[in-house]
Length: 249
Ligand code: ADP
Ligand code: MG
Image: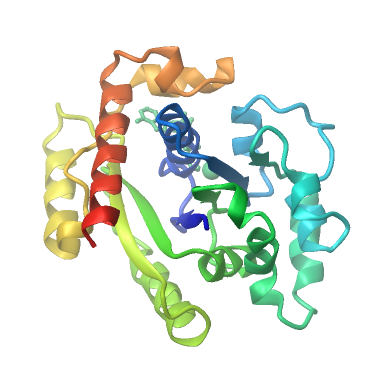
């Protein structure tokens, strides 16, 4: 039975897609059967995996009942594209609309150990579907001035889903990203996040790294693009901590 993690923040550019792409590589390399699900109509994750745009059924087809989950899995990825925006609108009028993704992923849950969902930068119906499907939430937080802005709303949404639709849901992991060690602001933000959220904040911090940001244009994560770089090592450490936590809890 797969363990499902929704990677979520209501803001764009906090490192969600990078986290999903990179952690997928780390997990697969250690033999963890990992399904990566692109749930953002922008399709950044699908591009990042270098999937062809005409690869076949996408998550939009799954959510609107036009394809089975198995049919939409390509190289252990369920891709997305702009048609997902329309699928989200259509979904809005349906019974059980919040449960659609959960039911769909359950079809393939036996084939994977971990399912990582890359959420869109909003708290709409797609994100609610991810939260209903998931056991855990991973929130990447960018170490910059507005880091905590909008977080209240995200926490409220998680709480609502937890109390009405998915009692098992937990915010298990906060990952500090794009940390610039040269600025005092970055360390202040990191400190503030730690005092606010305590032990769910991973000790490993992902540095701001040119190598991490260059990797996507080669269809790679930093794990293969530059495995010895500080970014790659930080993701490796982060993944180790996450595994350690789920074993000890
Ligand atoms: P989101 O999915 O939350 O919108 P992305 O993962 O797409 O965020 O990251 C936003 C941008 O920042 C991308 O261009 C990405 O390559 C870059 N980026 C992500 N993580 C880092 C990092 N640690 N260092 C430098 N650039 C990064
Ligand atoms: Mg993204």
